[in-house]
Amino acid sequence: MQTRGEARQDEILGVVAELIAEVGWDGLTTDAVVARAQTSKTTLYRHWPGGRIDLVTAALRRAADCAPVAVGDAGGVVGDLRACLDSMVDVLVGVHGIALIELLNAARRDDELRAQMRRLFDASCQENAAAVTRNAAARGVRLDERLVGRALEVAFAWAMSQIVFDAVPPDAEARQEFAEHTLLRLIESTP
Image (cartoon, rainbow, N blue to C red):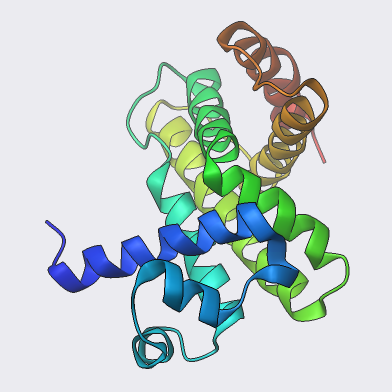
């Protein structure tokens, strides 16, 4: 159960995601967060001393935490890959996804933002790859965690392109087909 302080931090980070989706990285200011979240700058800087970049990083982490990977048995390797893909799509279709698209565009022009987003993305892929690899090992299947991580990067790019170019998330059938016929083949490749 969350404490009152944790719940309040989540509210503030939700405001950050909303503002990024509305005004983008360039329009995001601590003043705007303070006004929308009805908080103080003191509170913001106490929890996120780096200001805007720390707020955005925390909001992205929060989005990733809202869609965790299924660490139990999801029906085999394909099921685990599908669970990862489903969690990516869940993040991308909400307000956090809109914010993420805005931030990806801004990251092209901002070295600090780009580096922070890269660290978060890599950490997420590594965490998910480790979960898929552990699940497979428990079933007696040996996978190369590095290849699983690369496959998850491809999965993210595929999900993002489907959402951006088709204006809708890939449906369940398309996700299953992608997990079975693309991701599984990628991780079965030998380096």
